[in-house]
Image 1 (cartoon, rainbow, N blue to C red):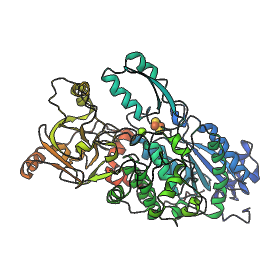
Image 2: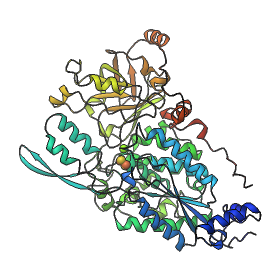
Image 3: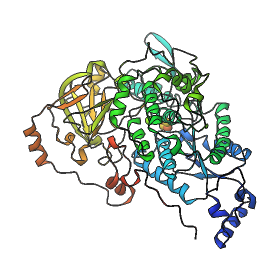
Length: 584
Ligand code: FES
Ligand code: MG
């Protein structure tokens, strides 16, 4: 009873719809129940549109509408679309942290695709965790996949009142929030202006328009070859965004015909391309976790050492917040990612396959930088300090990361005394206490912020500057934690200390007053306490009790890996085949 059209390989969806028995009858009947015709599921490829739209996910607010454009493209190319809603993770809304649910969404996408009669998938996502999550799930499912990024929100303008008069500034989400909050804390932004700011900076649906985690991850996915070239920086509200969605729908049908699966696209070369792009963008430190997790799903070896090497070699060329001073709209006008990649082409593996069916090099032909201020030439980088450095030492045997381009050179070679906070409640209770013995040389340490401990590794790593130092004009301090930091933030923050304190990493053994030494050039982070004393402290250490006796958080704590391994759940890693479901 197979009705495969001659130009398609045997289609997976036919296992459901072309079955000659009672089950096949029921599958077809249930499609007819919703108005589809028999031939719609018997003679066409069935395409999933996995949509992370929700009303509590403002970055994805337009994706319900955008799914219609994808649907149009699928229909025009001769496919049958099926929209499948998936868990939405609005970064600023979800508590305790979206990171706790990245793997849950990845698992959901994999199982959605595995259990349903679909032949290919279009992923609609873009906020920080929805991008790596949907890609991880789709890669594990192994069906032809194309990614449609939500796209950045539009720039806004804000009129700042200063003692010198008024000053109009272009503002965006993320970086400016922290910047203005610090000014508010220091008394330079009054209550009325603070309230007015609530309605500014986030002018339209779309993802944060800085080079935060969202823009970093969608760029990485484009550089991997899983999104249409130039698509990920197109503003969410641009008509080109709508056209790209339609093209993606059209293209996925062809990809099913070509058998173009993620496994043919995601090579080690593709991942090194993506990591190179991450560095040139001055991308988020969070990407160090997500790119390793995605590589793990593709069966590609990629380590923190690879990222450190590229962090040393590749200068930051994209002049975007938080490393620079422009926003994603400017990046798009400057030519977007293909222009940046063209500029880096000597350092890229140009032969890698992409969703266009063409190589990276072919996709870059004719692309050029349109504004050298936004995408800098190699000899005039935004920062020569690099987007990522991986530190090692007795305080972080598994590694820790730092973003030199967003940190103060004052702390690149530094030794100071620790002030230790056990979790965010302890930190918030004491950080602004005028009696806290803190000065510019202190090293603020936060522990209990890791994947197991917090749990979910929240973005607590950008510890606030104590108010008494803010009042004196101090805007940065060396800070250290096993947590993450928002990609939109800046500061001298050492993050992802691994192993984390909750599983007995050395961070658990630090005491107030201990000296900590950072040497960025040597890539070392050292707890300057002798080994015998560290051993004594270790013998006396008692692991913290978990508050979670049941539920997803319990499962997560039992199975999550450390930051240097990508924080995936151990049973989701790797490429072992998962059998197709029985159809009986
Ligand atoms: Fe969604 Fe920043 S909150 S991208
Ligand atoms: Mg973020």
